[in-house]
Image 1 (cartoon, helix red, strand yellow):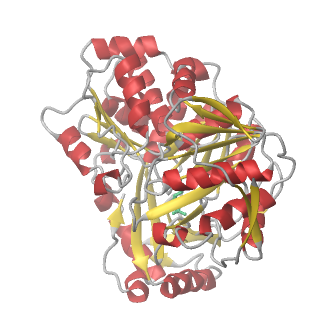
Image 2 (cartoon, rainbow, N blue to C red):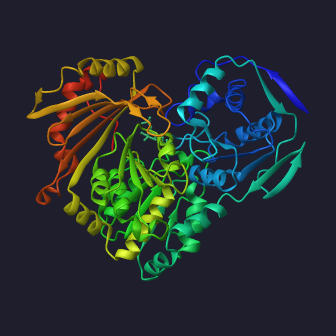
Image 3 (cartoon, helix red, strand yellow):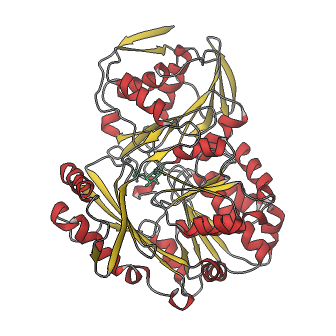
Length: 542
Ligand code: G16
């Protein structure tokens, strides 16, 4: 029943910021997915007889790889596989299922916010028993194994019916097809005051949620419409489609423009939100007011105690290095710990496990807490709704009051996508060479206070992660950060993060790009962006 299949290794299976992401045709190469999955299993110890959770965001090629993963888990000695019905599990729901059922780990099939379809993106990620993405120690081992692998094991059985909930035993292994929504919805009901949110909605508060034809559709339908009583139709694009309807399921102002336009219109709803391909990112827009992810993190942290799940306060806040310092001011006021980690949710795992941080966030539309070990789009939406229900104020009132109390961190990210890889690497290398001589120099009136290549010393396991982004900090608290994306699938993406702190309330109403204009020009000068990339403007501004 168990076949051992000889294979030839690939040299390009290096997991990036969040697992292995490639175009579907690359995953369709002979044994490509099998090699990577076997490399995962070969890098783990002690899972014999234990449970593996498998799920994905429903994108093109999801079902095929789910079948492969089930058969390989069986052949490699797992005792049980739990798989979401239809092969569906949002990333945060998968994290919760791993934790709730004390599984050994999980395989999540997703390329997140990247487009899906026969020529678009696919991804495989391994999560450990705490429910979070595998740390670098494990992803490095998987990559090393993938380069030398010579065989994989797979059970020679018929495909499993993924569309019927229930358990079956095949060759001593239990395969349980589970409802992907139930456990997650119950967890949300524990954390948030559903009664208060329901009353707010009953009073006529209008919510619109765009699931972007991706995985959060069934979750949002159940929670926002069925359990919280929002009128049918409040959740849009709720059917997960293998190609996300041809769109990028990326909840930002470019790809969720329709929602943005609705929220800026005359008859705008009170609250608009969206999530991404696999349900871990969020977009929050009030009537006439977009909330940046960095501000959202700070505001959620400052008000979290209004939700039952966080009523006893926060242990600490963590943010990725490029995320704005807005949350730092909240941590300071609350007198709690603040942690600055490299980009990628995997770096929050130790802080959450040790109880050092309760809420975490990234500027890339990711926020979450210690309830799971992934960022969680719907969680952020529900915490916002809980806060709105308790405070009885609008999103824009809450944001403006926050800025008045803490100051405003003007913030923007400029992405240059599909840049020539050598040119992007050279740009970063040139910046690295300049680091020692930058401090003390003045550019358009801004004096560089310090400059470094960010390295993170994990306070829990003491591992060191170097080369996590070039930081240029100016006197007065402004800064520019340069780093290359670790999730792209073609060429390189240069990300430039620009931030300026403004304590003066009378200057809180400026347009963000105008408020940052000087810094944007300085970033161009110091980074020599147009000369090195051949681009005169970013591809995406968020
Ligand atoms: C990007 C973001 C990160 C995020 C990562 C994974 O990484 O900048 O903040 O952690 O995506 O997010 P998701 O799983 O939603 O794709 P990078 O390396 O492209 O900047």
